[in-house]
Image (cartoon, rainbow, N blue to C red; front, side, top):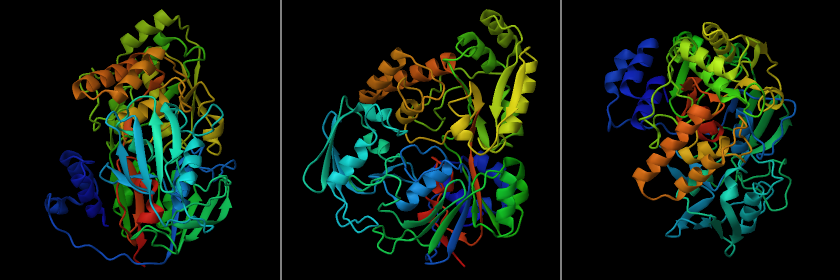
Length: 527
């Protein structure tokens, strides 16, 4: 898929509006091709080729890495999980819930009880056939107080999971949830053989992991018995951990890798003009927050949190860090493309005077506020911290920038330091995004913000069938986060990756970059 084909695809699936398309195409000198991007235009399809060695430069590696999908936090973990494993449901490129290891599902009338019919004839890498007991065991790994799963928060709504014969599973919820199939697309919920080793990489996916060097590389060979037709084309796939954006760029330009994750927005224009390089850009739910721990002084003071939110010049950050490849945020995590986005909620703007008002109420005396950052968080994270430091200074806020090591950022900084930069990929529904990061008992409640009244409305909203009432409830939830929560969210980023032109079928996703982290099984090499 060429650069223009990528934009065309995204335009068709709603991930890119025509204004943004024109801006990006002009940046890359592709304006002449825009006229061809018309809905319904038939395009010739290329026939996938088998073989080749696919190498991806990816972020998030650390020496503490594991192949277990349960604690996955960063791209290399997610992408490697989708190399060797599958979920019950796949998040489609059009935003739909697509059958994967579950070939179909049937909810009860109140959406409290769901039956998932398990695909027959699928085998794990060790030859064992997948059955309902494997599914029950795998899903139960995400339940219970001692679960290390990042999905444990929203699995608390599950009351029971049981097999119904060899190829069906019944899931009972404490209340109705029409979004349950989307929950099962979560990359933590990879199916594994019952009582197996969760760190073994023994799954049903397109690649068998033959080499794993934590923090350095993950190498897999094609599973010749892969059950999914038209996927897993390359003979081998290697994920190479490269935290530094400049190093990833150099690796792509010198042919050491075929795909690089997360192009630095500062270099998109330059890279787009390099012969043989293709830019892949997708808008979606990804966002870059500044996280304040609400359980730690001085961020346990809501007026201090509000002061910092009013002290951010969002337009300036989007223009200078994202180079326009994204949108401003409003201190809640629901993107504007979500059907339950709170469009009636007033956009917060840069207002140093309001910031000073809240600082006075907070009793702030000018002490330094350490802000931890690293480009391991996202390309441009350090620049974001510097810009925010300048914005906040106008309000009398003393931000002290702490440059953290890239290696181990997600273990040593995220959910550890009281004020740091981070990133979130998109989630397929508003309920999932709010449940995974803002519900009081969520494992990844990374602002440590706890509001029982928020939790109550969130649970009620899942089961509400009246769309207007549900919209009202989600607006209330977004308002609570914006005005009381610990996340300063100045921007929603577009996912921007790059590849050599030999990489074909790079399917854009509004959820994550790298084809929704499924690039290893979706792309093929025209070599």
